[in-house]
Image (cartoon, rainbow, N blue to C red):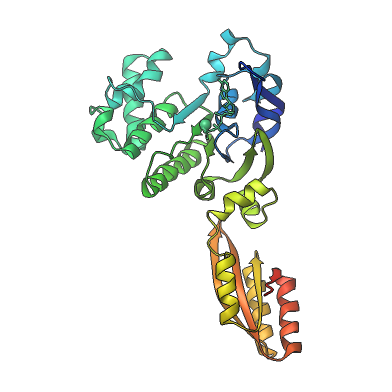
Length: 340
Ligand SMILES: Nc1ncnc2c1ncn2[C@@H]1O[C@H](COP(=O)(O)OP(=O)(O)OP(=O)(O)O)[C@@H](O)[C@H]1O
Ligand SMILES: [Mg+2]
């Protein structure tokens, strides 16, 4: 794998009336060709600024940015258009031209690129077929639902076969089910055309559904980068932990823990599980040796084809047997004993 987007020590400040605003601070980032890379952050973290640096809509204050082999931080404005044409973009509000038909919207970038009419028609049909909207070619944007509009946005962005597709909050205006449909289409786009996709979002569920790797942006700094699985399994930065709280329903909150303690007077432990088989074996062995260990909260999920779990267990039985059980489980998962 090789990097298709590379940031080295990139900083972006905006001059305002008062003190300058540092939107991005010392960003080092490497996005591999062919991956789906997620960038998550709260409002104002600098996500859109980062995206606009990739396609040259903003210029970096300092640092170096290389996109698809071109050092864009070394280019003059007039040399940027050929680079931009290698980068597609989709938006939260879709940004379709209301006066044009669906086909006309998808055709637009091809016209700009100077494609002859017959080839344009052929390409538009192919793209609309790919996004499942061939039958709506002569409708206007206002006749489509949000999800359908975003499909048109994707077809338009893919028209000139970009090597990179940037999606800035592309599903934030959609309901959860439509969001999943659009994310599925993006995955198919990635698989079938090998397009590198950069997904900007403030929703951890979007990251979980689509991203191979993720970077967490907090107040203009990248505070964590890793595979989606690793970041979900072992978040390190506080901002990441905060994001994960919104989607990890297998971890009991304080009130639930207090209730579990009342209901289960023996020892209570929570386990973060990455190896489900080893964990199952350890629990079985513990139970055979006389400790009664039962899962009282939590469960497992699949992420990027791997199991990941968080479970709370209550133990009863002989003290020594319970201690042995907790030791065994501790070797197979990350345990934390819950105290009263
Ligand atoms: N053109 C500009 N002029 C001045 N300040 C700007 C400009 N663009 C962005 N900023 C500032 O830079 C910071 C980052 O903004 P940015 O739009 O990149 O955040 P974001 O993570 O995309 O937020 P959101 O989730 O709300 O879209 C903010 O403090 C913002 O006010
Ligand atoms: Mg933004």
